Image (cartoon, rainbow, N blue to C red; front, side, top):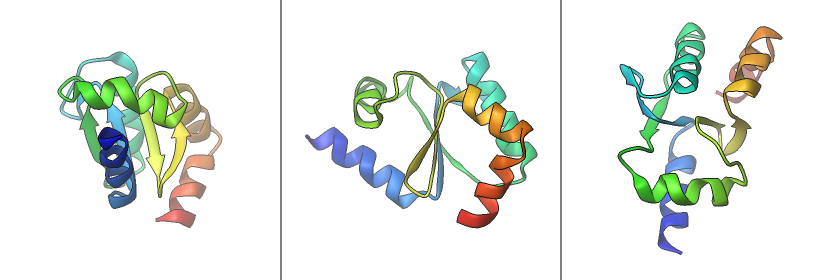
Length: 103
């Protein structure tokens, strides 16, 4: 399916990619807003895809990732998870460890 190829290319071409609702400057969801704040506090560069402006990705990424919700954080081609996982990893300092090792 062509959309899966598009998703795979986005993930493989971006070391850190956040699929979110809205943009970092204008999040359209509380969880997306919180995820962005965590990534910004880690002082890292990341790419984002606004799933509200990309309905094909919004529809098929959950099937591709086997993860039903947004936001979704991917690091070096690996799904980290949604906001709850991101928050827990941030609080336990595991997120910084992953970022240091993988980026």
